[in-house]
Amino acid sequence: MPKTIPVVLIIGKQNVGKTTLMKQVLPLLKKKGYRVGTIKYNVPSFEIDHEGKDTYSYYQAGADVVSISSPEKLAVIKKVHQKTPSIREIIRLYHRDVDVALVEGYKKWRYPYIEIRNEWTEKDAGNTSANVLKVTATKDDSHAIPKFSKKALQEIIQFITAKIK
Image (cartoon, rainbow, N blue to C red; front, side, top):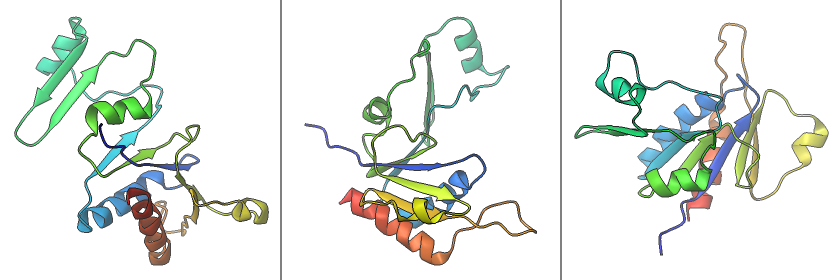
């Protein structure tokens, strides 16, 4: 029986700091020895391949699946015919060897999640559970990039590692 990979969603409105948080959390988890997968989920469309590359030509010519590999990495581009695969299916196929999968940008699934906001109302801040962590991102006038306090990052790492064990 394959192991169940824990999933933690990183959710929040656009430009609140989801990507920034993921980039800060990844090295902290790696330093603890965890293998981490990431999924940017449910975007309307994306391009990972580029005109002039062989793999692009194969896809444009009609290939349903295109793969490229090297000793360092593997990329797979697969037509999904208007049906986005579930998070579980993506993990089953491509993330089997990780300790945790962090998913950015999809809050409709029932997984533990970290919600980021610039500020919390009293009502929203109090509504919490063991599977929800609410954090605040701050921005100052000199930087457009959201920041997270050292304390918030420690809480986030504790939340994620609790889901792994």
